[in-house]
Image (tube, rainbow, N blue to C red; front, side, top):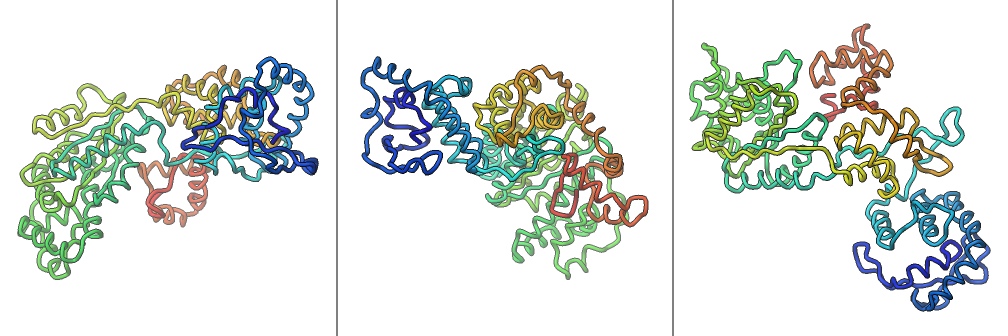
Length: 537
């Protein structure tokens, strides 16, 4: 790379012999050109003599400056041509940027704004190349957009299950669960924050580690517009728990649970199956015949429901079987639903190892909301309760998110990230929606010539942005094709989730035969997502 890196770079970093990019790197060595170096734009190199940078650089500063001035004008044009040819050879734009910025560190006229100011900043880019080569060393084969020979239509590379700057919060949740699993004492964990701040995603990152640690995880969410009573959302979580008990326990363990349930419920066992249908799977065929299908004469009151759940959890819960119950959007829960949760946590003498996690939007509840009395009741029963306020991301976290999405080094998109941070206050959902909006409006475009995303920082800063995420989403939704909009309306009639079987059934009707295709388009646009494999959308 002797043709690319000017002598000024060697002079500028002549005191650097070791670089720290996450480990010790041997002293820098000089590779001199061989006589057949004209065979390629960069030449072919052989190691003629191993020397450190300090052996090669001028020892006298004045001599070095004279030498620099003499080669600066001659080498600028040659460097530009050599650097540009990197893209033609298939190198990624990030490698091209690194070489260009290295060169600009010693010569003016290339890109002084992005030039490396220190060897530390260069080491950080090298470290990122090593840690994430897929992002920085690879680019897709792209075709030019219609009517434009330079810009291409390509999706942003936004990681789906990656959180930014939430390490502390994840640690707090994990520590709380470990405390419950170790002591067996039930606890509650409440996360509050604005819509789009990442409450659900934050909790979801802990699911797999908890499962690996032997915990049982069930998750449900309340809905604002639903024909289902909020109490049954809580009951659905306990019903899901029955499936996990069946799947993760041996026949001997299931037999013990079955016998204990029969002992605790006695002749009222059919009532348990009535409120938790999946509970019948815990029992053997013989037990089912004898106990489960007896006629239930009386209706179950709310107090009876709470007592039944307490009895059920007293058998199911155990220190060796810690259970995490996550209920999202508690702002749509009512007194009875929250009361049922309290009942499952409050019987400390019989119920152990339950870790309840709830999320809610604190900007959408009034002072008289049931959640405040729920928190007071937890504390009055001396149930350990942790409250976590989840705010927007820090500016450096937004910078990393934008870097991931655009596949550029963080330092090269710092101004863009700062502008988006100021306009979104670090709200993760708002940042993503705003970024996609800028791409759709071609304020940020992918350049085929430069093989990277390009934008004008001043134009981005001057953009007038909506005050909330809802307005952005509404604007985005109105731009959808009529068929996709109609499909979203149909899906919304079934609440926050619609099952695959329901979609298949509707498609048999002439009125909704294109529903599945339209829903797939809505998924591509980010308005829906597939969950639980093919079971639901």
